[in-house]
Amino acid sequence: MSGDNGYISHLPSHPPPLPSRNLRFLHPSIHPPIATGLVKDPPAYSYRPDICSPSSVRHPLITKMASPKNAPHQPYVDEEAPPSYDAAGSSGSRVESADPLLGSQPRFDEPDDSFPPDYKTVVAEANLAVRQRFVSKVYSILFVQLLATGAISALTFFSSGFKSWVQANTWMMWISFIGSIGALIACYVKRKDYPTNYILLAAFTAFESYTVALITSFYNSQIVLEAVVITAVVFFGLTLFALQTKYDFTQWQGILMTSLWILVAAGFVSMFFSHGSGFELAYSIGAVIIFSGYILVDTQLIMHHFTPDEEVAAAISLYLDVVNLFISILRILNNQNNN
Image 1 (tube, one colour):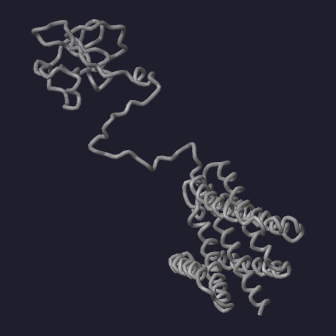
Image 2 (image 1 turned 180 degrees about the horizontal axis):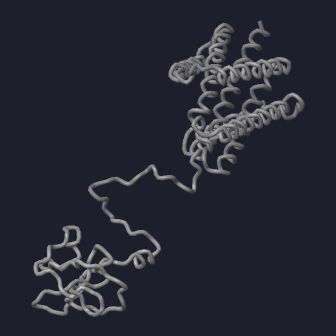
Image 3 (image 1 turned 135 degrees about the horizontal axis):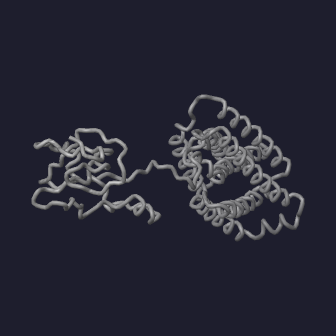
């Protein structure tokens, strides 16, 4: 039957209960009635217990229903209503539980918007532009280092006063030796901190350049020039070969490290015993082989070991290889010249 306003005024005497997914909105003892007719043009309507609310007809989740017989005209009110989305979002921050749900762990793979993604991995896995920029930085730094070392070493040949001062003040050798080691360690620790890493790089290069200048001051300028040319040819040849070949030279690291420690031990022992030119030649040839291998290894490692913001550390590794190769070739040429 219908009332004057077009709504259904009588409901079935035994209405079925709501589905289980809607029971959380109601008191457990309430089984609300369900309308069986259609609503046509509902006007503004106040709540009546014998007529379904328009809101309950329009929405499947009925939250405003008729009261039980023992409490007429008293609709059910949820005492702990959930907070509104506006209230939750007004705080400006997301509230998270202190303990992860079910023992779950926080995610560490979420991207850091403050750091470019290509700078979180090794250079070989970055895009082409990042790889090219990194390689250009490394070899530009290396070129400046070698240029500074060559300029300071050349002073010993063009300035007799500087050459005499360097050879007379041997205490500076120990300062440059200790300073280069300290700057090298600091560069490794601060290799990603700009501009601290470049300041430490300049200090390390200055100490190493003085050491090389002291060593070359005891050799003939012609032999030094020959050693420079040979070192440059060997370095460029090994670099191109390491970049073009598909062979993985990085697997040589263990062998080269063991050989280097044997070479260092042999040099330390030779300080306390007399030796001839044969030992000097063999020692220098061994050093050339070892540091040539390190050039191959480090050339490939700069792409597969360093991240794009570690150009200083990559340049230092190549710089040490070149300097040690140069000194070894210089000793070989001097040995042959003396013979």
